[in-house]
Image (tube, rainbow, N blue to C red; front, side):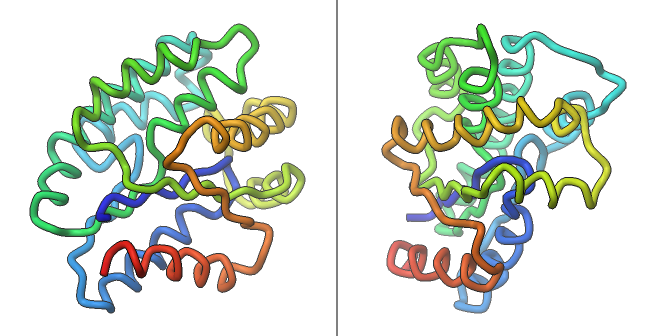
Length: 204
């Protein structure tokens, strides 16, 4: 398996864990490509600025889902697919599961999950993640972590929304066969050790 995703609510620690996991894989002699969604392509980074800037204001769930999916399509075609074909390990921060949660499960009157999956299947083509690690943290813990940084447009939506996001990821783990829930309330080192142990056998 060569396409590994770290997912979870804002404040779960996925970015720091992804950096550490990618570094460890390189130490094992693997070629590694570390990417983030949205981003990691010129189009993706431009859409990231638009989607996360507070000046953008509120967008309809369908608009957000399509913009995130557009960034994802460019990332998969131009970065992830070539890396997988070379035999590199892709470590990605976020994937379509975020769209399922943020634009459907966490939103009253949000999009139908199957609608999102139809769009993301088109964006991914044959290159779906091998495994999605969902770093699960208590909503209060995540809130404390988010307070240490400036909130982007989505992070600024309020506690109620982020409580629904956390619940949405728990639900998504039940719906998505690729998802594996990881207890991220533990220390950074314990979570990283868990990730390494699970990845080691798949990328051997």
